[in-house]
Length: 167
Image 1 (tube, rainbow, N blue to C red):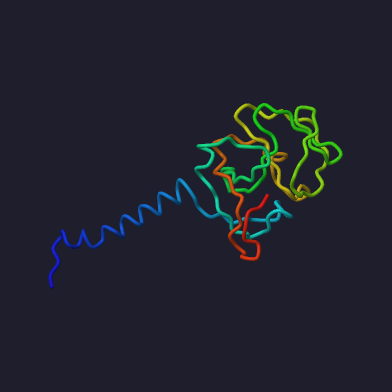
Image 2 (spheres, rainbow, N blue to C red):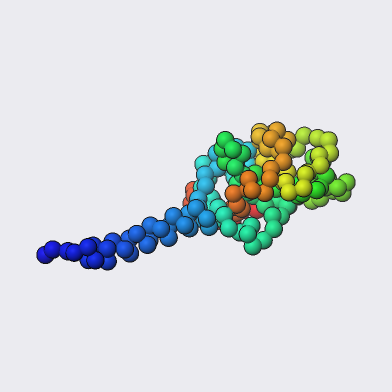
């Protein structure tokens, strides 16, 4: 049985459509990311696989304490939003101060060494790892622009024993 061109196109078109659909979803909406290193312990662990929502910030604002993936230009890092645009951020005696007022942190993190007040530039975000003694974050790199934030993540998919939403 010989197939003509129309028959071949009709045969492969559903496969091409599925491939295009998957590429669009992965590039613009949702993908998986792997945590690299121990900078987010105890919340996240090295090699945790997480779902990354790439489109969420198109419909909602970036909020304090969101866990985000940032493109540093050389690598992707997973960190927590601490300071928002225009704010003054400081840690003193392991307490977070935003614009001179103590802000309670409702997640576990290791001790944060004191640092002087830092003014976050407009359109930028100050981030820290939860493992504050072993994290390359805004204390090293400085604040990050919104366009460097790839998306928000809050769901571990692997290992299965850690499956679920994280805070």
